[in-house]
Length: 386
Image (cartoon, rainbow, N blue to C red; front, top):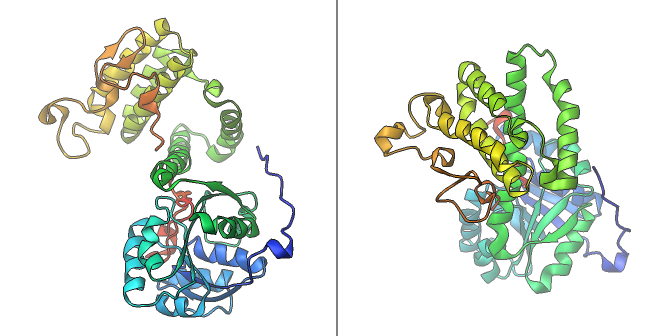
């Protein structure tokens, strides 16, 4: 479902002045954003990147733009895109500020979903103008990313006096600004990670299981089904739930778990967690009747207490449930009837499934500038996107 309606082009008087643009971190996100700004009339002048993948990406998306050091990028550019992994961003900003690389009046933009503008405070004290522009999109590191920015929402955090400039830059890249409060950035990013990054994991697992079941083209089988499920979920939310958990088919769920223990034991824990979350939400919205939920929840609780929930007899930290003092999986906790909720969970039905607090990307879209290898690079913006 695509409800995006392109906005009218900005009048020249409403556009920001043509800027020289620099990129610190030639991961999947930075070169794509710079290329998009170039289409809007801005001029990329410098990019920093170390790995072979970064160099190739910069050459493909920003041909003839020189590769230089981060300090030199800041020396040449009016607008600097800091598209590095979340964990690297605070140290990068502090280092640039301490070395005097930041110029007063310079626009400093990061694309992390996790952070607002507070992470740029060292640069702000040096006179920089801080913006947090996080594209809610997964990135590939290719030219297709520039096209995908059309209609893409950006999670934007900016000082009041820079809101117009931030929105103008987002619009010039073809996106739409969604204002996120500084204190809400981690929650916002976690929601994106839950919806996009975890979706990739679920789809990849589903394809593997279908291949094991003998399906020759799992992508072709899943495509229409997942497309319809996503469209229905975006339109109707929890009302779009279907399948054995939502129906309370305990026998079918038990059969699923038994097969997974044999063919894909490492996927059992994820299946149980998602089934329990689905059951909680279906109960909360009146789709799963309490009388049907009882057997289903018994199956999930019993299965969570078994050895197959983690693909072996030990948990992820190398200790068994017995050694650690009991199962830690919420699905293994004592159940209240008839609601079917763990006794020590939040009083709001379905709260155990509401874990949205993004990734980039996806994120899935966090920008990863210098990936060790082309196939290990992550996206920022949005894994950031990430």
